[in-house]
Amino acid sequence: HYLESQLKTWVTHSSIRSFIGITEMDDYDQTCAEITQAEQDARIASCRSSNPSLSAAIQELANNHYSHTEGQTSSSFSVRDDPGWHCAQRRFGQSFKTFMNTTRRLKKSLPDYLVMVDDDTYFNVDLFQEHVATIDPNEPRILSGCLFEANPSIGIPFEFPYGGFGAVYTKETIKQMNTPIQCNNMDETTSSLRHASFVRSACGVIEQNQIGELEFFRDGMSVVDLISEYSAQVENLCLHSDWIIGYMAKYYLNLVPPRTGSRNSKAVTLHPIRTWPYQCGNNTKAEPCSATKSMFCHSQTPQDLEAMITENQLFYPEHYNYGKNRNSDTYNNIDSITSAILIEKSNEKDSKGANIHHEPEYFWQTATQWLIEKSNEYATDLAQRGPDEAKDWVEKLRNDTILSDGANIQHEPEYYWKAASQWLTPRQVLPS
Image (cartoon, rainbow, N blue to C red; front, side, top):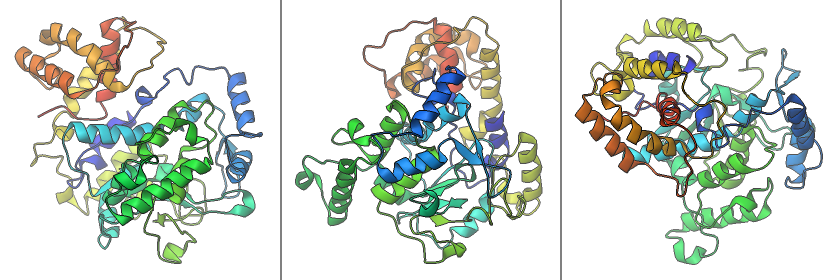
C-alpha cells in the first residue's frame, strides 16, 4: 500500500523517469525474520560485544548505537529489537544492485540522480530540482536529506544519512560505485590516473577490512557488488544500512566534498540538505514537515502522501500530469499491475514459509513456463495483452533475465509466479 501510494502521488511528477520498489521479496534470505525474540536478542548482544570483524571505531559505534533509532526527543533513542527491522538493514546493497540490474536489462542510460527513500517517505521533486539546479551530476556527490553528523565523543566516527529522509547519488557517483576493482592487476586495468587512484584507494580499504568485507571480496567486484555481497551474507550484520552508506562514502568513494559550513553543518563527505536534529527528524526540534517547504518527509501514511501531493499540485499543476503525455509503463500499468498482484495474493494454493535462496530474476525464470500455459487466464491482468503477446512477452523476459545455475525447484509453479509478480509490481518495468 505504501509503494502504491508513492506511485500514485509524487512519482507522477513529470521529471521522474522510473521508479523501482524494493521489498522483502528482494532479500537474499527470505527467512531472515523467522527467528525467535531470544535469538534476535542474542544477535543484538553479539553486535554490542567484541566482534573481531570490526575495527575499534566501528565496534564502538555498534556498542553505543546498534539497534537504536530516533527516540521521542532529540536527546533520546529507542531500541528496535524486532527481527524485520534488522533484516531490512541488509537491503541497501541489494537495492542498489537491483537498480543497476534493472537499468542494464532495460538498456537505459544512467539517470542524473538516483534518489533512495523509504516507502513511507514524501519527496517534493520541485524543491529538489531547485536545490540541484547549480549542481553538476557529472561530479561525484552524495546528498543527504537529513544528515547525522560525525561525533566521536559519542562513538559516531563518520557522518551518515538518516535513510528515511533520502540519500541522493549523482550519475558520476553511480559510475564510481560500479567501477570494477582489480587489486591483483592494477597496472594492467587502469586507463586513467583518476581511475588508478580510485582502484588503489579501494584496494587499500578492502585490505584494512574495517567491517569484515575482505572475506567477501573477489577481484573485479565493484563497490556495489561488494556491499551487496557483504550485507546479504555476513553472518551477523552489526551495521545499520545508513552506517553502510556513510562508511562507503567516507572510505571507498572519491567524492566532491561539501563547502565548509554548508547548510550550517560540519559535514565533510556528504552534502546535507538538512541536518539532524535541529533542521530535520521525526521527533526533534525541527519545524514540522510541510508539503511545500520540506524536500523530504519521513514516516508518512498513504493518506498523508495524498494530502501533501494535493497541496503541492496547487503550486505546480503542470508537473503532475500522471504521465498522460508520455508512453511510460511506470504510469500506464499501475492499475493493471495492482489488479494482477491482488489476484495472486488471494491464491491460497501458494506455499507458505518457503526457504528462498535465489535472486528475484530466478523466480521469473521459474514462473515463465507456467505463465505461458496460463496466458489465456492471465492476459487481461498483464497489461491487457492477448495470449500471443503474453507468450512473446514472457519469452522476451526469459531471454533478458538470469537463471541461477543448478537451482532446485521445490515449489509449485504458482508459488514462484506469486514471488515473481510481487517482485515486479513495485518496479513497474513491463515492456512497452
